[in-house]
Image 1 (spheres, helix red, strand yellow):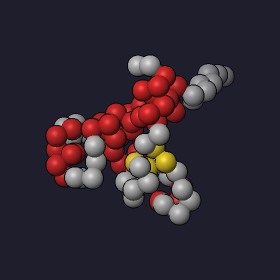
Image 2 (cartoon, rainbow, N blue to C red):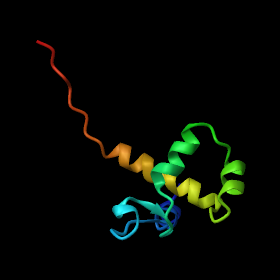
Image 3 (cartoon, rainbow, N blue to C red):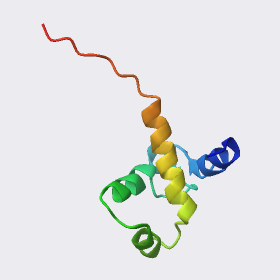
Length: 83
């Protein structure tokens, strides 16, 4: 995926302290990235998500997954030493 496309998708993810306590949401709506990624992880098909939440667009799903992937990539993993 090119940088322009990534920037376009990530622009759909917003955060505002007045909306869901500042959690990342889709396009300023009261629909969190967490909620969307959890639904995808549970196996809810994209067609069902789009039908159940008509305000969602296919790129919202891609944006949420990209955002989650980038957040996971930033995690630092520390080895646990067992004595």
